[in-house]
Image (cartoon, rainbow, N blue to C red; front, top):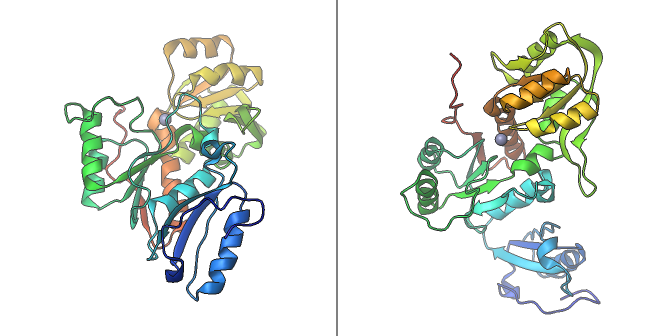
Length: 336
Ligand SMILES: [Zn+2]
């Protein structure tokens, strides 16, 4: 069953004569899956789908063989695993920051998926919506749980939500900082939405793309004009900012969410303006001292648009799965 040089130390979760319609394989090289496709393909007239992914390379490590067989199905339903593979390709988890908690956080990879809901953060409202709309998988930008959980009780909000999701069989996947930094991720979308050119990571990493983005406007505009452009792109009515509205802006940096710590890199890269969701008072003072404009859109606005786009991307990829961005989710902070 295996190509030359690879071990045959594997057991099949099906009778070979039954020829499953779907066989999902994760492996490092793709060699074994190709061989299996040939062998099984000749033995059956039914279609066999074999996928390979490098997502498990850390777990495979130095093991002598190069594959892990995950599961075989007798039906054509999409599984949580399918979505994981696609999401992992869209926002590779190795891009996530070290402190983050990303990937499948709740659920069963083998569960069939007919409905996916994206959201920025899982809240009690989102959990109710997921139950009412029979959602099988929630793709939440912010992780839940984020911190290690020692007990799962309903005494606290997070425990209650996890308990409810588990009872309903709803899986949770969170790409978080992997999605912030991905090639087509949130910061890239914002930079492109502002028509920036020569877009680069603000905090480059040797082993990956890096965090935040910066680039140049085709022609200088005023800070007021940049704010108008940003409000239009994010579909919001107001922002808070540091700087003068007539200040000339050419180079712009962006870091979604709470990315005030990237102000230093924006200044180091000679950016005239830095955009983030929220930050503290002292970072605002530092921006003014550095004569770098700082625009605060609100954490929610800086990232929510991206989970709406993510729902569109998943719909395109899986036309048979009903995918939507949460309707119940809203910014908890009102402007008075
Ligand atoms: Zn965030």
